[in-house]
Length: 220
Ligand SMILES: *Cc1c(COP(=O)(O)O)cnc(C)c1O
Image 1: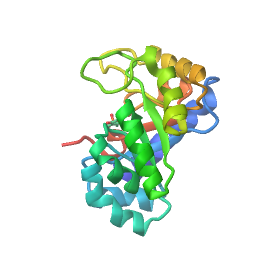
Image 2 (image 1 turned 90 degrees about the horizontal axis):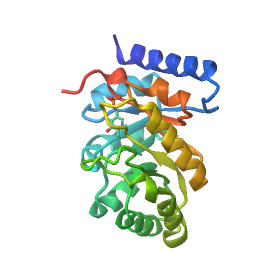
Image 3 (image 1 turned 30 degrees about the horizontal axis):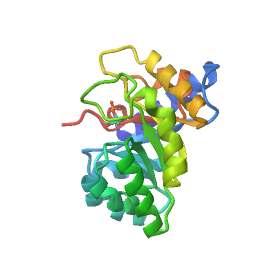
Image 4 (image 1 turned 90 degrees about the vertical axis):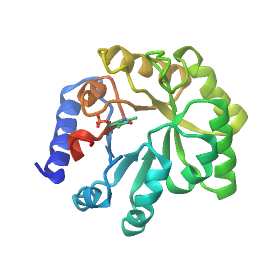
């Protein structure tokens, strides 16, 4: 199947769950995750009308997106992978949305970079809902306080929360926890759900689903 067909199937599936599920958000944005794929594979997605894309590495994105963005200026580019503070300036200049704010140092670096570039990005705080040692994200217990500190101490407006559930667990409880934390923190957006579980995520109120392989195929 072509990337265009895959994209249509995912968009149809999103509409289907949205209309049949009482917990679904009114608007669900599809982030087409194009990490590891080059401009040749991304272009058919753009030509089919997709404008929201996700990448997990700043450096890889710098190699392909500046040209694509000047050709398709209404693209919205989301950073969904871990961010190092020394890459904050580069991230702010290339991306429109960052999903992985998860510690004080990053909050501060983003605040400084956004002021310097006079640019305001939309930000999500990543929560490590499974409390996995190897995974990025703020622990669930600290999430609400961290959102408040981002706002009060760093002047950042946080739009929502993001999570990546443990891959070997039922994701439902993780999505439910993220939704509960977002309510407590007073933020509206929920970035959750990937190729294997985006339909479940929508049932739990996802506003942003991050779908890669179901659109672009398996990564090498
Ligand atoms: C790669 C990635 C995705 C997309 O995963 P698929 O299973 O290919 O849909 C979503 N979110 C994050 C954070 C990722 O790194």
